[in-house]
Amino acid sequence: MMTMKIALMMNLLLFPMTVAAGPLISFKNDVYPILQNYCASCHSPNGIGYEKSGFSVRNYASVMKGTKYGAVVVSGSSLTSNLIWLIGHHADASIAMPKTCTQESKDSHVCLQASKSAHWLPKPEVRLIEDWVNQGAKDN
Image (cartoon, rainbow, N blue to C red; front, side):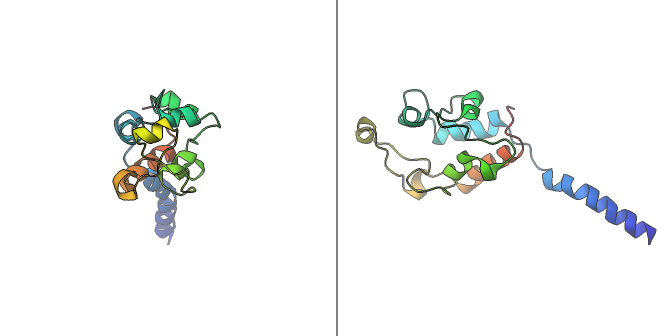
């Protein structure tokens, strides 16, 4: 009976470690390339997304700075990080990201919503960024 109690206590103590365990997501090696591939064309200085929101994916510091309206990443909480809401298309469709911009729409400062299959981040990439945020959104 005592052995069973000890085994149960060990399981309870070790369970949180197994939930938190998993591959450590690197901003430099994992997240940054995704942001560059899907977001940098609009969210870099002189890009339309940057002009509208002030959000840049140029580097870790600019991502963590967020927009002119505030932070988009809440370290440790993908549920309260606006970045995840936007790239995961949980927000209103008018602000969901990424969007696609044609030269014509850039000139008029209007971005057109991308077709889901062509330009939205694939779910594995969204999950990877979610995991990075939940792991503390570290500069690694």
